[in-house]
Length: 394
Image (tube, rainbow, N blue to C red; front, side):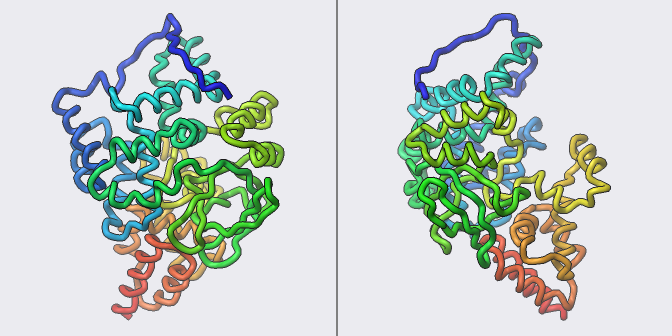
């Protein structure tokens, strides 16, 4: 895959208002301070400044900061590492090596995987900057290219991370340069453990089960990078892996270096994969259960169309679904395979708050202890707290 990039600005685009155009000097200062707080590992201060920017109040980033703040003091090394990875591919700072690497990676990702988005924007006269912003926020392929192939993670750690974030960066540093692989999901082996088969070496690995099997189930294939977890089991995916067909997974497994990107481009060219399959609007740190998957799991099929419509209108349907999952978990109505969804639900800020208010009651302790045994921290700590509370009121 070529790493040569060029700046081309198609003519005829109609520029609409962008967030950058709406930022007053005061709001830009709030944004700068929020970012500075994140880079020293202070999610609480970052959230305070973030909430002061009106156009960010319904943002995905706000929800992510809220989740981090809610588990302050309980962050595991792998959550710190994922937060660092996430920050690294958002660091466009001018006059920095990290920012320059990031911009080159984004142009590469657009040209290689998302040229259709740019072509559509060109045909419709829309602003190309919005395409770049979407790729930066949602493209799994861009995140992987930037973090590893373009060295953004290593550069961010050396150049921009400080304070407690830098102190907690040991695990993240061990992730630098991790190889991309192709894997088949074999199924849940035991508590917190998912078995995946490396299709390149025909080797079985136990990985931390954060819900990577998701809705695809056993027997399906994914691509991703296995990295040290800092816990048991010893491996995990650096970010939620991407579901692909068996052929693509095997081609990625047989590739070296950035050959995985060529394999993805071939999959797109041959129709096995669409560029849109690489876009995710629900990036998560503490779980591999994506928000839309959580919503679907916690919603009756007959209600799903209505709930999705309400989600599009701005209602927090993911939080409501998280609460419904916890309500079912409190009664023993779910089987063990639901553990990653229960973990994701209890980490949802609204779901957790609503559960504390509305469903904790005597007689539930055994159920919460069971779920705590099946889930890793930081979800486990919250579930144990539920067990303690229900024991105290029994």
